[in-house]
Image (tube, rainbow, N blue to C red; front, side, top):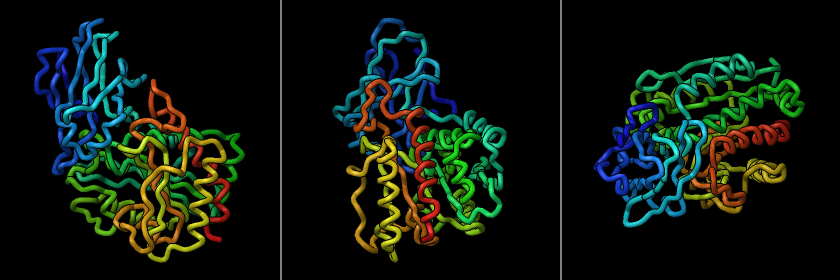
Length: 377
């Protein structure tokens, strides 16, 4: 059996693969950072019908060790159809077993979103969704950070911004963006057409291409957590944030969504700006309405479980959501999807996955369509 991870988003260190019943592995930390949790590797030369057991021996030292409880790894024979494999966490190791049906299998922390698929997404957005590539930033390693605009009314008074994958291991975020862009392709969508008469959409499908390609969990090439850089971004260690801030300041922001994944909480939820200085009754009303509309329309979303609310004036304004909400006095949310499952509608075979992430992206547009006229009331 051979194990490899020298491919896009790959991450694993082989300790001992001589015994297929006790394969010893470790997760490699982010470059220039101590964060790690994301893994993605290929095992080939498997013996059909024979159990194979893999152990991630350093899981207990990962960034979110508590997240392994109740978590199940994903696997695929073709990198297209992903399913969950029974996993268990004990004595600081994450272990999962498979009796393979094919001689090769890929394992990952979550269904990966490849750079190849990203390139196709950008092309399809322009060719099929009517998106315009209005600007391109550059990561530290020179990878493109594309800013797409969907504009159907030159006099549209509002600007809606959605960014994704600041944390590179949170691949569900770009699946969300793919779903959003797929919906924009529909010319017969009256709800979407009404939204686009009132607002332009500004979309950054992947904020952290270096980290994603390198198999990082949380940081960019410099080891910087981009979602802690919004008050101190600079060209040396966080040009990704500098680029987006410059573009936002050029056109303004009326609604901002930052798309993420959460390691520990098995629910879809949103975190708002209630701790920001100057948080107003208007913003409180808009936040409550946004959450309730998602629930009322049947989206996979809930508002019971999530992060503790910040006390007034105690928000961490280095986070994108809080920084943008504060600077532009706008409705701003971090939307979190799980690495596990949305326990309100469990699916043990897939857990939360790319398809469900895509649907949430489509559903969020429905909420924006209802609320767009009220964003500045």
